[in-house]
Length: 291
Length: 163
Ligand SMILES: Cc1cc2nc3c(=O)[nH]c(=O)nc-3n(C[C@H](O)[C@H](O)[C@H](O)COP(=O)(O)OP(=O)(O)OC[C@H]3O[C@@H](n4cnc5c(N)ncnc54)[C@H](O)[C@@H]3O)c2cc1C
Ligand code: FES
Ligand code: FES
Image (cartoon, rainbow over all chains, first blue to last red; front, side, top):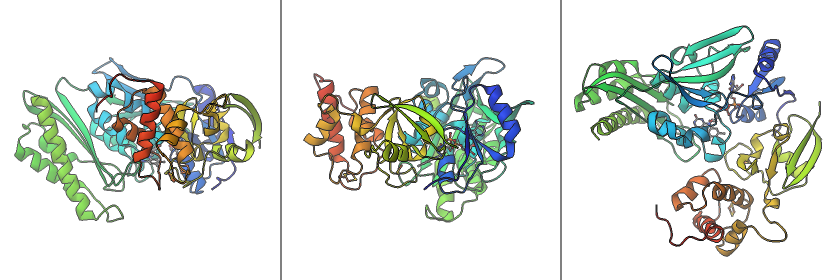
């Protein structure tokens, strides 16, 4: 398979990349890991006239915490999934992300694919979108005219669509630092390594003296975009993680899902998996807290 | 519009004019005449086209040749040196790690990258590393043994590591 012809530009500074984007906006596409874009170009579902390769840009490979305010994790646009999978920082402090990273595509694809690229691609089957929604992260976008921070809850605008403008580069994603008593995980049902999720569930909870102060639940593969199960989250806040509270949240999350029957399973089956996985994730939270 | 790229392939600098849309796998097979990278699925799924770019496995059907300008590539043709088989090649021979051989070049490259990063991998770690490479023949059992054979040759250990 051969993509359509395009002009290839490889800027070496961020300013150069931003002015190229400003100049070519509608005709250009950014190339990050290429693991979604190149397959689409080969199938000619995408045929950009200009490709702006950001892999040579300095200063986009950071994966580190920033202590300002309540603190947050910064994930640069060129941080590969393989780096996230190997990160000790994620294992120690960001368990939802640490659990998701090894479940995305396969080890070779993870050497190239980026978290930020995955968010911008906005595949409803994409795993990072649900994680970012559960953790209430944000995307930092830069253009020649300025910078803005877009909360994950406002970033996705339907299947394969975000509110990012064509002249904007997503330079990093941010995730708030966890509170002292936080736990999370990502559970994914997939048919085989490298398959997209039949169902994916991101869970994140913080507690104080046994009472939930913050809950985040994101759902993958069960709607036209990643879903934030807001009713389920709200049902947990202010309560202890009792069997009853967990059961209630799991039912609300299942009700929030909008799965469709396809080769991966029937709608009813997927909704049931949402219920089971949300409950399982919350029970794991409870066990981790007790440990 | 063609672009000139210079790539170090198996230790040798190669310069060529390529169209930006030329995929790395076609550059290797058709421009450099290195046929070890195979096109299996052409949809980023099977891993038969994997080669090492600066030591890291990539699917060469999902990268443009212009992206590797200035980089160092290893293909299966570069595994042996001075007429000596690489330990991973020896392992595949000794343990019958292949049948038709279609997946083998990429399997060996991915395994050699694993052993660089982790000289004494557990069976689980080996299976993880090759999980992006499909083999329709062997059932993987002998591929795992071949990698273990290579690990033992490269880094003899007093006692086998358990999971
Ligand atoms: C076999 C296979 C299996 C996969 N399985 C999964 C899976 O299980 N779960 C999952 O979530 N994903 C999966 N993926 C997708 C993979 O993780 C992609 O790599 C990822 O979604 C896109 O990241 P990328 O860096 O490769 O982006 P690219 O392909 O380079 O870009 C994707 C899109 O985002 C835009 N873009 C990228 N970066 C930026 C930026 N910084 N600013 C502005 N625009 C940008 C591009 O223009 C393009 O439109 C799979 C892919 C393959 C090939
Ligand atoms: S040919 Fe590249 S992954 Fe199958
Ligand atoms: S030996 Fe035939 S595909 Fe692996």
